[in-house]
Length: 311
Image (spheres, rainbow, N blue to C red):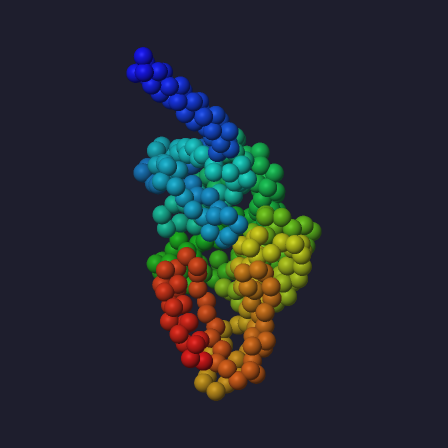
């Protein structure tokens, strides 16, 4: 009798555990998030080319991929089904070996179609129902109308670095990128801040910095005023990267004994600081640039703590 009661009690407990697990499963928000499907139809891409879908990491300027979000191009086709961790995931990029990223926006529960020709993925066209992607496509159409073939030609120098005509190709690529900056700045003046605006301004800042287009710098910096006051650098990684490229002083070697040029940086709370804030107190000033995800950087802090105690 006692044995029968124990068996019955065991069955009841097991049923309860299974029921609880099932309830937890259906209440888990991750389980109920529909997938993001990406289907590609591309020409001129060799069979066997690996294609990976990556997701923007929080709101930084980095993307992270999963081994399950990978496919191989066969006959010009690839298909990836991504299971989001959050319903708010909507910024993705296609990553392929040694090629620029193809960044796009997508909504869970929808299918994104990617079509294009050749290995320059920035020339591929993304189509879906996401409102941000539609706006990004408007940006691209605006540039394509004013600089025909820009997205196919902008990386000519990148793809022909070993060509005998590299110098000529580089000059043409720089010319096109200069036109891009001029036209994109004109477009951004008519737009309001959102993720598409932020990423486009970042692209402009990168080119201004690389090609030393100082004549456009002030106009680009003025567009940062469109970023709402409640949007900090922690909310939008593209903003902080844009500020770095536009507002940091030009690289000028400083000799021992010379006065350091003042500049401003932003801390992890988005607060602005100037170098001059820390001058004149009779102490050494240590300026450190590192990443919290860098193991070596974190180990170095132990040594720095000893230095600080001595100073």
